[in-house]
Image (tube, rainbow, N blue to C red; front, side):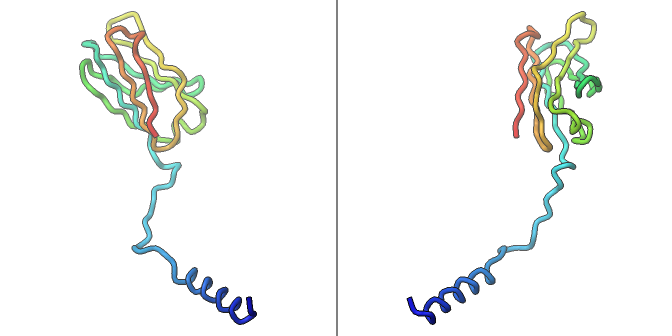
Length: 129
């Protein structure tokens, strides 16, 4: 290829790269560190339950999940960012039993869905990204 043709191709590629860009205004995305984690508790039980979250050795009360309803808790990312995993723990009010989730790995903006069954041992938790 001749020197002139090679220079022309290089110039054409540089021009195309310079003209490229976005088709609209820039979008400000939230910083990953500022995204909260949602914990959705779906209760199939008639009994209300106090819900806690273990972050490392620390236990934090999220609130009360109402029986036969879906309750959503919002957890600031900074509250869980120091642990590699969390666990959820529920204690039905007035009963002497409790259930603990498997360890869950969460990231900013994740949603944890925990289904509390009538037989607490059948409860399960999933993380959605």
